[in-house]
Length: 476
Figure 1 (tube, rainbow, N blue to C red):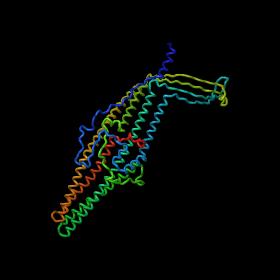
Figure 2 (tube, rainbow, N blue to C red):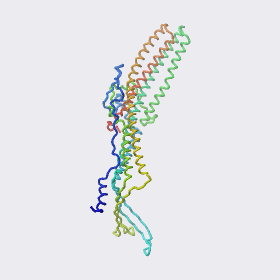
Figure 3 (cartoon, rainbow, N blue to C red):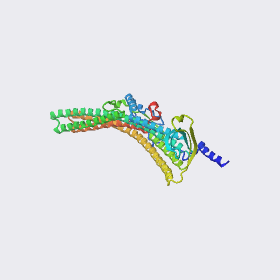
Figure 4 (cartoon, one colour):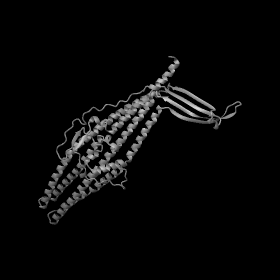
């Protein structure tokens, strides 16, 4: 083969089957664990009526909040999702990232432009000055011989994937926070009702002690003790109302509504059913379901592609170009065949010396990949830790609710006996007030324990990824 033919074949081969420098991305291996905790204890059977069973490997529904069986909660979540400015912003950012793919992919195709110019120049000698008008197309094509452009497309696609998972993360955070605020409203309403009931009981005790004082069977100190108990319980009402207002306002903001224009439903604890069977994804599936893990992996893919982009800059670049123009001395003559010019060419640019900048860029890309790989692994570990914490919380919540329920039962029976005994003149007012205090604390603890158990169940679903990947048209 002659040297001339070799010079033609080499760039043609590069153009048709150019190599792809840099590493080909491979997803990192999973954590390789069989359980979320070292030992998965069986659920507590201390309260069979309210025991929760962990259904390992069961599918989490897309609308996981439906497991609480509250029609008003379902309606509220649909309104929150439909009106969220956070989701709108995330969707627009995703659309922007997808346009970046189109922009990067354009580098794989020839670029065509139309050039037009008008000049007046001194031709020198006897020619004097003259006008020159020209118009015509130009075409250029950069051969992706070493895959730099294809790696840019790969990087842009990975960044778009990251934005897609960021949208899913925003969706999961939005729904999780909304359910948590709804549970807070229900729990706080229960606590307010409990404290109001306690205040009524305090008033009854005060009336009872005042009657005994007027009959000469109680000291003035007994009356003051009963009044102190009533005053102490009254101080709990204002903070609870403030907590309720904050939760309502937070849920309004999550629904992209001004608190002055929209008030969320006044949820009650009884309308939220505690899921008896709690679906929990297998540990091997968690890395494919948590949007923060998937977003971190997409960043890892983008950093891998960036290594290829930096590596391709170390190699020559080849550009083909062609142009055609029609030239004339006046605009009117441009439509006639007066003068034509064309050119076809190829250019080669090879880096020789850049002061080590290109190699430094390549090494920096490798370092960025290593850093993101470590970040990805830490994200996975944190996710497993959150699931383990949530599972432990449910286990302990069950024990807590059972113990709190038993405490209310015992304290209530003790208070009833103390009231009867005090009415019969067998015990002092101090003993009655002590029994009232124990009963008050037991009821409040039980109310908070019920709300905490519901909240921790919701947090477990969020920690598992929330089923967003199977949400149909409502999912991101």
